[in-house]
Length: 87
Image (cartoon, rainbow, N blue to C red):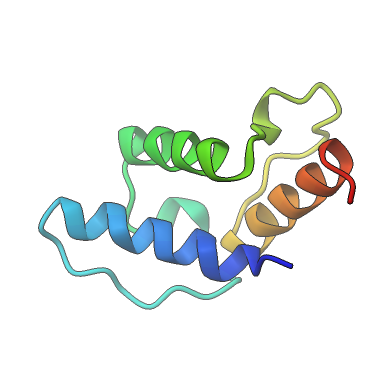
């Protein structure tokens, strides 16, 4: 089973390193808007995660609440993957 938070965090760190910046510590409680990504980086993050998992939870009509922190975002991906690709 994938560790969605670890993979999310590593993808965020990779995007930040590609800009030539040093990523900060990330925790499940880190607000998405404070993780070091700008709006274009967040779009890149969602595209990379869609490529990785084969889902885009933000295009799902059943999304009731936008995640506010990284833990919520990881949980959203985990729920969407298990719903759209049950094992």
